[in-house]
Amino acid sequence: MKRTEGGVTAAKGFLAAGAEARIKYQNRKDMAMIYSAVPCRAAGVFTSNVVKAAPVTWDRELVYHSPYIQAVVANSGIANACTGKQGYDCCRETAEAAAKALDIADDAVLVASTGVIGMQLPMDRVVQGVKLLAGSLSDSLAAGTQAAEAIMTTDTVSKEMAVEVEIGGKTVTIGGMVKGSGMIHPNMCTMLGFLTTDAAISHKLLQEALSADVVDTFNMISVDGDMSTNDTLVILANGAAGNEEITEKNDDYETFCLALREVTQTLAKKMAGDGEGATALFETRVIHAANKEDARTLAKSVICSSLTKAAIFGHDANWGRILCALGYSGAQFDPDAVELFFESEAGRIQIYKDGCAVDYSEEEATRILSAPEVTVLVDMKMGEEQAAAWGCDLSYDYVKINADYRS
Image (cartoon, rainbow, N blue to C red; front, top):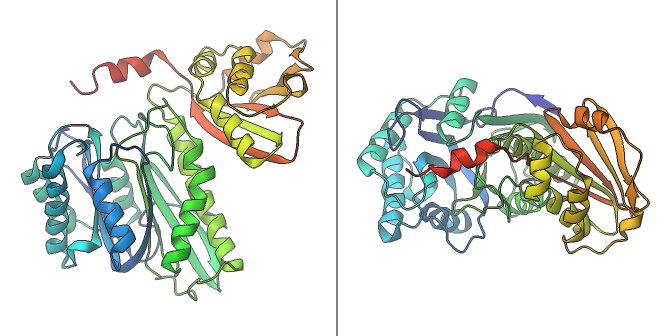
């Protein structure tokens, strides 16, 4: 497996574009398009929030029932959530505009939105944006980056990733882009995310691979505990690599899944590290847990703890908050058996063992916690399972960003 440059245009046969449509923002790109020269198999996972945005409803129907997908149109600034029938009609009108511009079927166009909830989309600007996008599509890596920039809201950086792997003697590429900085808390995945691959793979296995993958990637991140109404992750596979189609769970399927994991885990960590107001990526790694589910539950509980996140921001080795978060997670364990460590590029230090604090240096702990990426290692001493979760610290700027986000 080899990491390569680019995102959604890294795989063969995919084009992209970003454009300024002035949907809500001024002087920045706010619409993106992804297009495949040939029809694609598509798979997706979507928010489990009962309140679902219109694009989620539209995309679920197409991913599950349309014979193929060939394009995605996404906008930032307005979420098209809680917008009633008019919001769903906007999805249809957007898809129709893209279908006309690209000369493809209406039901081959996915749509996605992110931004403020409750506002209606200015469809004259959306339709004009679709025309601009269709006219500027390119397979260049720069075009993929422009698309990634166009879906940003409070993100501070665009997020892309691509890898190459050999399957059936052919070079297969998986690339992707995501956005997400606030209202990030998983229960499927959390964000807008678009993955592209030139692999030939059956629809059934593509969906199984994606659904299994998010459990340990996008489902293991959290910024603020708020699950979005718009969470959408889709993958398009156009078969342009020319490998023999993957139709069973053999070595080729496992190779594909490993490559997919490399892309999604990297993108998930980029999202967590770019949480609103964040100054550090905060990882919790649980090892020697009794079972996999407990490992996930324990790791998630720590990275979701507001008190622990605040301590990470303050570079404070407040290990009691970590132990507390483990204790209310719902997993059963012996607190006296647990061992806790802090790790970063600055070093590693043990802070808890045998039911109480060890004799550690507060100054050394603070130095380790001052790094841009910080890990809490939790050794449960119960079994052989492990899991990791990713979040960020909780800073003053998180409140500043969200206090007047709408107004």
